[in-house]
Amino acid sequence: MQKKSESQSDDLSAVLSEWRRWLRANFGYLRSEHEDIIQDAAADLQVSIKDDRVADRAHMRALGLAILRRRAVDRYRSQISRAAADRKIKEKSTAGTSEDVSDAVHYQQLLQRTLLFLTKQSFSDRSLLVRDVQGKNTPTSLSAADRQRLHRLRTRLGEFLKLRALRIEENK
Picture (tube, rainbow, N blue to C red):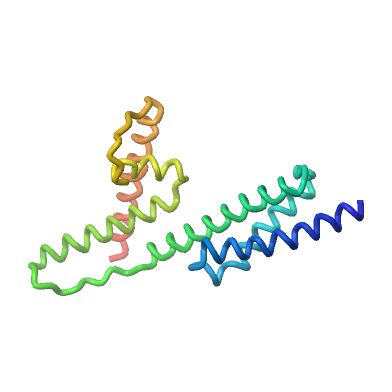
């Protein structure tokens, strides 16, 4: 049992160095977060190893990389979400009328709220919501289940935007 533990510890050390390289290559803009992401992923991987759900080294490496990817994406989403929520919109005086400026600020706020909503959705939900604006010229029809899911997502987005608008109005 001791030998198995030492072997897994050596494997984990090798995996951690691979993770650092992978994060530098794929999430360089999160450089200040790399060690936290690695610690979170390593802790989750250790739980999987202790539960003996890992069959061999290749499985451990694949599982570890999948966990790392998820932690990195989660960290990225949380940063984007915080940035969208914290960012203050500054009205800039332009040569246009005050109505034009008001409309521009309104649309900018709407876009920020929509981005905040999208960061909280799963990849498949985000893909479904933005499928028409991705620039793909091959329209595909949706299944009945996907149409229903899209309808529900759009309804939730509308409710989210209304709720955020009410909160902003209350804070004024």
